[in-house]
Amino acid sequence: MSALIHLGYLGMFLSALLAATILPLSSEIVLSALYSSGFNGLLLLAVASLGNVLGSVVNYVLGFKFGKDIATHKLKVSEAAFNRASHTFTQWGKWSLFLCWVPIIGDPITLVAGVLRSPLWFFIFAVTISKTVRYAALLYVLM
Image 1: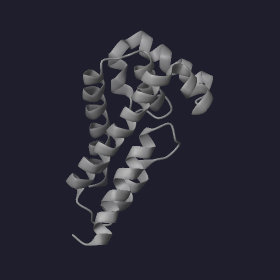
Image 2: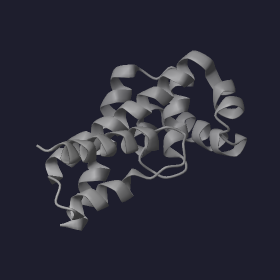
Image 3: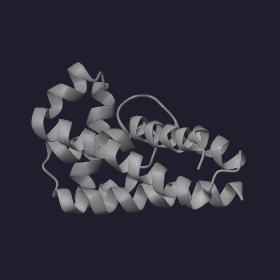
């Protein structure tokens, strides 16, 4: 593979990782552009999913170590978004992690999962399935 192609996959990974954190970024645009440019769909799926899951793990660890304060004061998650995510997580429990792909509430849910000490093994399982299915659905639409 040429260096330019490697940079494309690296860009996809970083875009997906950062988009899964509380930062307001969209990795779907990068995925669409790279796929439309001829990048391998399965490799994009793997790289995007890995980056997005790792970004969610960052949220989980931040929530686990620093609690609600890191979200609302340091990361500037609005009180309303944090409360929505907390309500969803409290209402549905660990199963709400399957909504982590949903815009606006998804990233805060992964943070709340850490705050509320959701089991890490289930967190990784649910987030991996959810994020991968979302990217697979997007690639399917682009075909």
